[in-house]
Each structure stands twice: as structure tokens, then as C-alpha cells.
Amino acid sequence: MLDAAFKALAQMFSRPFRTVLWKSIGLAAVLIIVVGIGLNRVLVWLAGVAQGWAEQTLGVTTNMPVSVLAWLLSFAATIGIIAGSVLLMPAVTALVASLFVDEIGAEVERSHYPDEPVGMDLPILRAVYEGTKTALLAIMIYLAALPFWLLAGAGAVIFFLCTAFLLGREYFLLAAMRFRSPTEARQLRRMHQGTLFIAGLFIAAFVSIPILNLATPIFGMAFMVHMHKRLVGTRPTFAERDSFPQPGA
Image 1 (cartoon, helix red, strand yellow):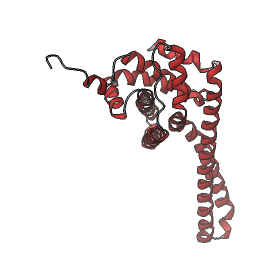
Image 2 (cartoon, rainbow, N blue to C red; image 1 turned 60 degrees about the vertical axis):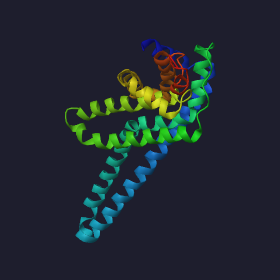
Image 3 (cartoon, helix red, strand yellow; image 1 turned 30 degrees about the vertical axis):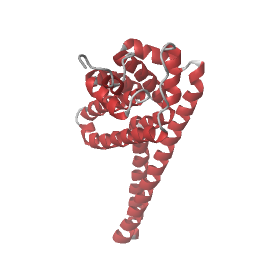
Image 4 (cartoon, rainbow, N blue to C red; image 1 turned 90 degrees about the vertical axis):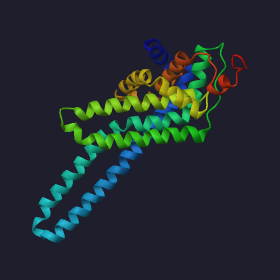
């Protein structure tokens, strides 16, 4: 597993990956900025509505305190959105990874496994579906963990472990589905779920590093291509294995 992680890190900044790396970083950054600005505008608008209601209800003599309160709420919303954007990186990177799964997977397979067949391109709708599903689950977990952030960092631990599970699952499925059907890929994931959770801890640690986490799709996908090869090797898919003649048949 450590060897797979080191190989993924070493290849991240190689010449063939640079274009994919910049596209991945650019898209992730744009998504974070758009989401952050959008949520900030909504919260500022709500603060303005609350200010107008308070002025009409309490009278003009309280205009200054209400304005100060509205400004404080807007400022707190801005800080909250910045922090939230960082915590939403697992969701963003899962979605971004679905768009570059084939470019990353094919390059890793050609570079490190030249004697083995390269996987088939994943249908874009299937890849986006998997990425979107994981992104939505990550957001739900983020929201559920928020109340626990005040309990001695329990929220951070919960969020980290859930991120490891989700991203380990997501990237392995994307890597496996280049060679197997979605059903077969999910069966493989269940067979090796303990190992994949530990592998997911590596991705969760990577996505926790500011700035560098924009490159998580590259690292996560490359890492799980290696993990898929190590767990399965050149064994046939479930469908191929079931088609072999059985002893005594």
C-alpha cells in the first residue's frame, strides 16, 4: 500500500500528467470559488432581510446597532464559507475526479503495467453519476458532523474517517470499472472493504492539506489504480470466471 502511494505521488507531477493536473486543479478551484461566492451572497442577502425586518419592527433609533449586527453576521458568513469551502474539498474532488478518470487511469496503466491490457474508458454519464453521488454523500456527512466540531474535535475525527471511507470507495470503483461492470466492481469493493478503508485514509490525509488538496483527483485515482492491480492482478472478471468450464462438466 505504501508502495502504491509513493508511486502515485511520484507520477503526479510527471510530464504526461501535467496537463491533467492543471485542468483538475483549475476546475476544483473554480467550483470552490463559485460555491463559496454563491453561498456567501445568499447569507449576506438573508442578513440584509433580517436587518430590514429588525429596523421596521424596532424603529429607526436602533438602526446603528442593527447595522452593526448585520455586518457582523455577514463577516461571520464570509469566514464560515471560507472554512466550509475547505471542508467541502472531498465533495469537490470526487466530482472532478469523475471527469478525468480515464486520462489518469490510462496513463498509470501504460506507465506501470505496460504488459497488461489498458482498461476501457468509463462512460461519462456513469463516471459523473458516481462522482456526484459521492459528492452529495460527502456534503451530507459534513453537515451531520458540524454539531460535533465543538465536542473536543470529535467532528474532525468523524469527518476524516467518513472522508476516508467515501473517497476510498469512490476512487476504487472508478479504477475497477475500467475493467469490470459496476456490479462486479462493487463486489470487489465489498470483498476488500477493510483494505480499501485503510487506503482511503491516505486519500483523506492528502485532501486535508490546503492547496495541495486541489490535486487530490490525480493522487486518489492513480493510487487506486495501483491498489486495484495489487488486489486483483490479472485475474479474470467475475463474468469471465463464471463462463469457464467447471470441473466434471
